Length: 191
Image 1: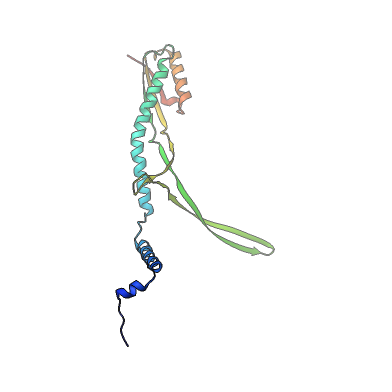
Image 2: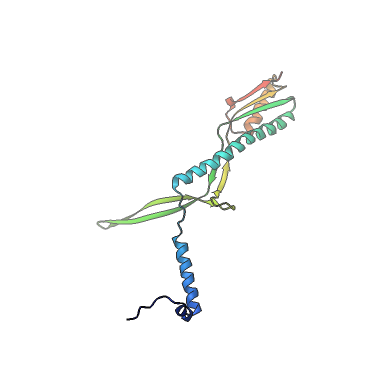
């Protein structure tokens, strides 16, 4: 018995389309064998909280300053108020609501009691954060909506803050603009 080995002549006898198919199968096997990075749930939540923290530090401060400037501009136009300064405290940093893919895995079971048939569905939900692809490999969580920080208190220092009628007008204006309790609004006279 003659032992046959690999030779160039045998390779030349194989049709080109079979060689092409063989090469494609080899590439496909390599692609399948490459390990894919799986993110764990803890890592997913960590990246989400980091993005929220970074955005909230920037936006909460600028949001509060923006509210103060706008309120100062409006109150300065009210008759009798005069020069005005406003300080607004925020209750929280706001919230970023990220998009989640939610899938349900359900199991059906049924029981029969006499002539009555009962069925129940037990379900488990699985949620995964949706990431936007903006050129980077990791991506950032896709933000569905931003909830603005809540106003906790308002201090208004006004030239006309010594007049009870003007104090009432300022308090009413602040109550109309912000959902803050009346006892958390303070109007004082400016020196």
